[in-house]
Length: 211
Image 1: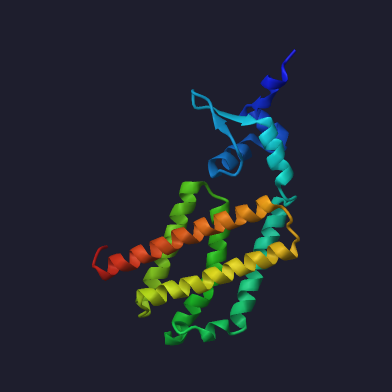
Image 2: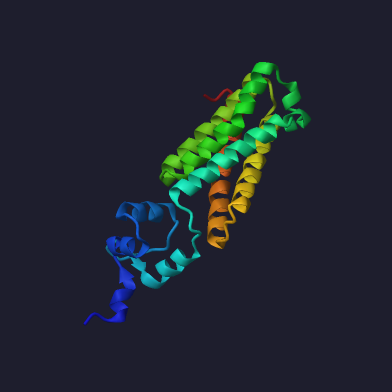
C-alpha cells in the first residue's frame, strides 16, 4: 500500500490531474511562479499535494474567457476616461500637436493590450515585450519634443489609468480571492516597472548619442 507520505509529492502530470488542467499549463504556471513547486536534486519539479490544494482553494473561479471579459472591460474604461477629457489637464499633453495627441491617445489601448500579452507569455518573452513598449514611449516623447520628465509623466498617466481600470473590473466582477488580487498587482507592477526602466534607459541613451 502506498503511504500518505508518498502521496504527498506529485509529478508534473499528477499535479495537472489535481488541478484539472493540461500538464503544459502546469509547466507554464510553474515557469511564471504562479504555483508552488520544489525541485529534486536531479532538477525535476515536484509538487506538494497540500500546497496545490490550498492554492486551488485560494483561486477565484475565473475562466480564461472571464479573464478576457475583464480585460475588455478595462479597455472600455480606458477609452471612456480619455474621452472624458482627462488628458486636457495634463501639462505634457497640452504641448503636443494633434498628430502627437492621437498617438498618445492610442497609448492607453496599446498598454492594456500589451498587458494582456504579457500575462499570457513566458517571463523572458514578457520582459522583452515590456521593454519594447518602454522604448517606444521614449522615442515617441523625443520625437514630439517632451523632456525625460514629461515622458515619464506621460507613461505614469496611462499606467495609473491602467491600474484604475483593472481595479474597477475586479471590483465589478466581485473577485474575492486575495490570491487573485495579489497576483494581478504583482504582474501589473512587474509589467509597468519593465516599461518605465526601458523608457528611461532608451531616452537617456539617445540623449547621450548611444544607439
